[in-house]
Length: 261
Image: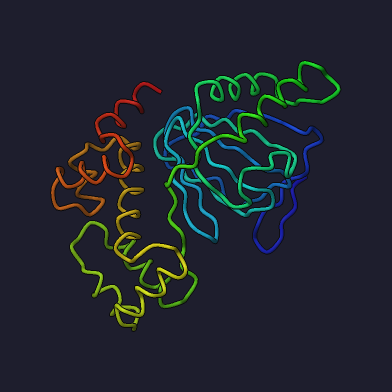
């Protein structure tokens, strides 16, 4: 039975070193904040997932996965119908992935491995076949590449107010200076705080916010032109240029990949 601590559900420890489960989830569905004793690899066969922790937000498109270290409180929001495949691994079984959340590319081999593990369910080292599968999984996860699809959360109260203001005004042309004024601090101070606490300039942080919002909108079935405006871009062409620069592909290709998944 799961426990609860300060509003966070603590899931029970799983007996197997690796356990894989499948879920089919509806658009808009939310998995409330919880945490696992195990490390977790959450993969999207279809749809887009948004993972939130106190440290920030990670948007996970189809054919990507998010790495969630053990005992990290997190919630997950679904954009579009989501086919989720989750692999739980005994904490620190994978050594090379960081002890913080990250989005990673998933190779065709890892994709098929995850899907196969979900048909197995619980894996045990006592089984030679299971042991081989575990070793292959660990070997592959040691070499995955991270994808910059995160939005770090500033902790300073003034910077956090600016972040909240920007998230609430994506669809209009409010300036960064306006957001800083709402927080009661100068733009120079907020710029310094964002660089220190998120590793991004204020402008880069808002650009990343717009990119992640556009991924959610496209997954929900919005047209590219509408997603561009809702994410804060004045024209679809500006949005397409940003999208290509950030992800190395176009919104149209991304949209088509959602339809194929």
